[in-house]
Length: 571
Image 1 (tube, rainbow, N blue to C red):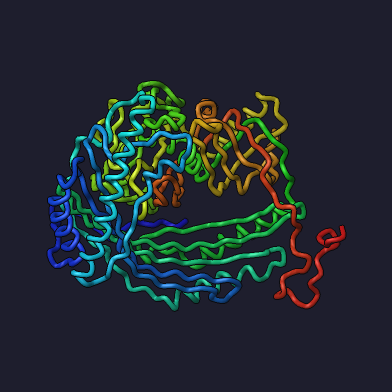
Image 2 (image 1 turned 180 degrees about the horizontal axis):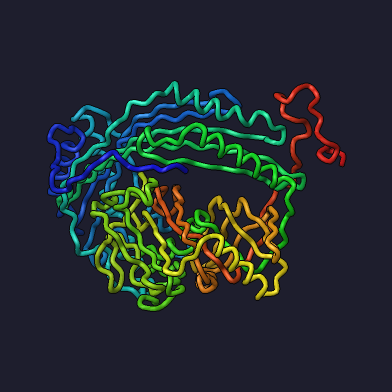
């Protein structure tokens, strides 16, 4: 990825105030003031907090396949959610309802409203309708909470439901649009997608471009008035094939940037595509690896995904409180949980790292709290959790990680998760250390894992609290230094054991930019890590299809489209 920087906004946080000409903000604030004043004591149980959040979207998406445009879409809309808390900070309508059935507690889901775009009275009408629906729902849920408390065991953590800190910032900066050459971009992705047409082993491929401009509006009864805009672009490509044994194989790459001037050069994209095609061809003839336990290197970008999945989710504050969660690290604050040469923090303030754009950047979280750097692990010792405005025992304040997408309540989520190391060596030296580990363990080979598609981690205690990392490209490395591409493996394990196996890191930091789906919907995230050397990891076989590749070659190859004998149905 080329050097990318975020250049949209130069913020002076004390210089902005709300723009009274903004019809949407004025309608939200007026309706909030009226509704909160009249509803706070309307029933026996008080409404003690209320807020609105609106996502004002505009976007353009275009897809290309084999030199043609396959789809194109433009979209403008506004989506709103309403937050209400009935009861008190100690116990309110958002409190977890304990039940053996997950369907009995959908507290993270909220109603949404699609707002009118530019009419003040129509916007207020939409807000009024959503407010009424949300109030009745919150009141009904609070009654269920009170009933459930009478028949359920107490939580170990009795810290209440809402933090004491208040969000009173006033901030105004809408997104700034760029004029982009849409026809030029379409021609670019058509040229890039045409490159896949030369290869008969490619079953499917695409090149995609998207432009997303989003302005979030947040107002609440604490006094917050936040308007924060963000502009981002993404260019990506995908190429897919299938092995004779039914294993699905693919390569994928995405480029994220905030200004069209930072889009990678066409020649760089073209070289990346050539490399991905070459890797896919290698995977088609690669060995299907048997389950493995032994030394490995997890290369930098893959390691960043590893930290996001395996550590980040287990440090989200709400997971330390719920009795449904495994609470892996809930009672380990002040204890060493990984090697002392590792330090971990999350800093949504960062717009870039090493000149590269960070997808997890924001100035305010979805609860209106100003973002800040949060030290999570200091020299291997657990110090803090990712916090929203739901307190934990000994953690009574948010550190601005309450996040969500429209239709959900905020929960603690990651932003820019960054892992730093005080025990670094060059990547070449890290490979030499891997060879030493292979010899020490008397294993026939080790692994170098270069690319991960993603993964999933199970944090709830009613299931094995393990993780699975989906490996897309890896190599065996033999004691003599020979390397050989392998396929068909996932990395598995449990976090406490896995962290203890990290013995060194590279000095080659890289970035994972992506989106993460959890209880509060999909949010943009980033993670930064150097390459990691493990004394031992474990892998398992991947799930695969029972279907063979297509019988005939793609139609653009020509009339002689019969596959090789080994690919036919009758082999």
